[in-house]
Image (cartoon, rainbow, N blue to C red; front, side, top):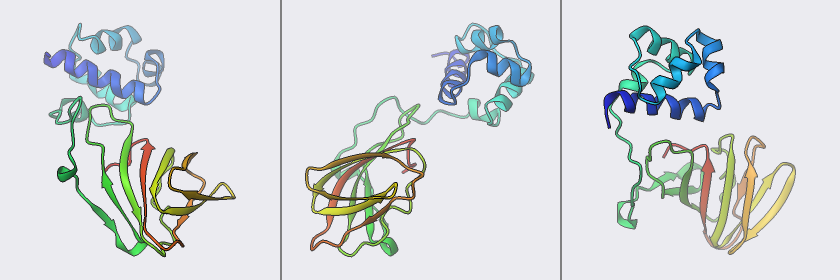
Amino acid sequence: MSITSDLGRRIKELRQKKNLTLKEIEARVDVSATHVSEIERGKTTPTVGALSKIAMALDVEPSYFLAADTTLQAELRRPKERSHIDFTDDGFSVAPLSASVRGQDLSAGLVCWKVNCQNGGRHLREGEHFALILEGGITLDVGGQRHELAAGDSFHFRAGLEPRITNDGSRDCLALWATSPRFGF
């Protein structure tokens, strides 16, 4: 892939991720939609001034588009390669399952809520969340409703509702947890 087409791909990915049209970029920074389209398709290389304006419209520094791309399009992660993040004070841990894949909007992890965990949801960010309980159980208070989840149960919700997760059971709870936008682990 050429530098011009890689630069264009990065601009297009970020523009689409921010749900902006070419016309909206044009309106924000006075770079024609046609010119931005040509840049995105790798047909032309932007001037420094045009790249700066496009970056401004997308709320990033121009270097965002020029930095080395270290993310992959796909990655296999085996169990022994997984890290383990402990939130000891909050009574839970996460083993990230997803890697840094180009354009990633999703994160997934194995979450373990220890017995007597009282606030295992306070780290959740705005966005969509999905949980599949693999072992044990938790109580999930979200949107003013209380849900008892046991092995085999799944739950899908939008965060921003200040979810509270507790484990008052007699054993740890293990769940597959997915979130979008990505959590960043």
